[in-house]
Image (cartoon, rainbow, N blue to C red; front, side):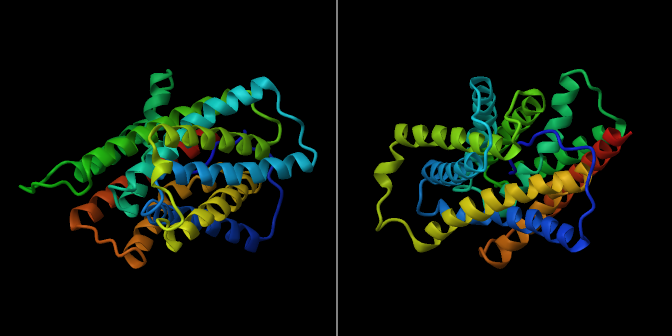
Length: 311
């Protein structure tokens, strides 16, 4: 999952093609790889401990860097807005991914998270913005794909994905959607990078509190944390949060939002392939079909929404 952003500039500067290609590769591959990194991380680090460490490290470093560069001190209303966004997107949204990764493999986790554009259409319809017919079809297609994942089909006793894990991920995706909608009108810092840092600090602090309440820290010791989990945590903090988010922000300024939004249905493909190639994950044939259906529905919704916004 990505982080909330400020409204992008309508004027896009011309940049070399190789820089654009490099930027898209980062948000495609790096963000797609974070699901496997989370899976490896929670193998020996409790999920909310890992989330707290990830976002407090990344958010603290980015906040200090932006303030040193002269970003204005955030106001109380800006902190309130960041608290709501950070709680909805990072605490609930990413927290759901970290927790569910204990029950659902990384590829299927990314596929369920990719339903965010489908939730967005439903939430906007609830707000009084009726969707186009193609968007309704896309949502229906995506929900059919989710049904193929979580419902036993053809006499099978077991679904392709753990129902509890899928429900938690769906809740996280809905929370991400609500937070994204709120971020469109919330009074955030004029510095987009500083706003992201504040949201990461809030999300990390919430995860820290929850990890203490759940007693997760009692299960953490130097001997219990594997090297793979520790490296995954560092990768998530640096590449997943700092580099990935910074690149995403830059792309929003130099490329169209529709093009940047393609990460929503490219990430699942990357995550599934990495999970099979590096994580030793094996997906049943029905899961492959469901993934194709979900990604197709999300792509249809995203492309139609892109044309709608540019009209």
